[in-house]
Image (cartoon, rainbow, N blue to C red):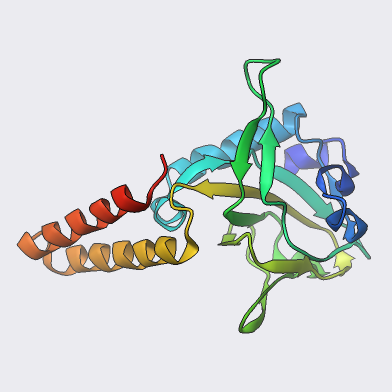
Length: 215
């Protein structure tokens, strides 16, 4: 993926920023509809479709096509909150854009942490700041309602993919409970296999999804 990105065109990252976040955004980006972005995005979407942890945590209804950014020396992204709605152009051409409600944000790190200094993703919530700098190939999934920023890069270059997910379960607390419940069920299945109680719990899990999901 980095080989493709190294040969791609890069433009000012403000092209996908809102009016407020555009004032705080200083990075580069591969144009979202370029062949490189589409090809790399499909790699990510295919991998996500096979990832059980992502499926359980997000209960995704729609995934915004992945975008790709780059922070060179001195670049950063100030504190901001992502737009609540994103628009994807219809693949049919000429049709109305598809709306994606941004329930969750995702950042997939594509550069080894040893290759750059700074560039931490800092997610701010009720309990303070959480600094994230993951190995290449690892991804963080977090609430799009969170205020967050990227600290200045002081050495090297930080490359990543970022995108948003509309979950079938809009309510964040309900989504988290379902995630915890699914993890507990899977853990019990590994310990004791499928018995009547686990089948009942699995049924309860799916009935709660039926109650809460918009799909």
